[in-house]
Length: 220
Image (cartoon, rainbow, N blue to C red):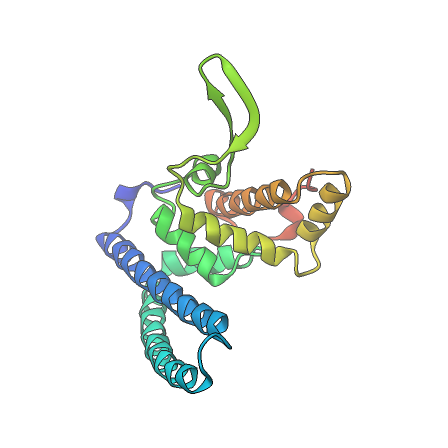
């Protein structure tokens, strides 16, 4: 695994740009979701004439935001396509079941193309996907909690990635069904899938190989 100093200066610049553009993209996506939610919640709440006019104004804002979103995503794509290391890691990551482009980009940004994090367990803690047992003084509680220092946006992204695996046939869906049938809490199983996705991402990057299902051991 190359250290940060082994990377050309351009990689550091790309990482900084990706981080800024990704934050900008997240802000636009949140605004769009907020507008859509507002329209959905207010249907039938106001007079028909007023709501119709308000809907037109909000749809104009949404259209403008969608245009800006495309511009930001185009710049992100340009950066990813301009650097061979970023592009190679992106392609490797997105080959993993359940890991889409946005999850991959978020991981590249958070890890600074795997120079800031090389340990999957540390990254799982950072992203809020590795709950720990709560202890206070000499007492110990059985409940598991996520660190308040965890990156909530990363947690949300990996949660969506884990949930997406449940909508398709595959070993992760089989794992989920098996654990739930055994009586495991559904959310704890989803969290385990999040951790497994992170483990697979770091495995192929740290080992410098392409993702293939035959490399993955049967899920416990």
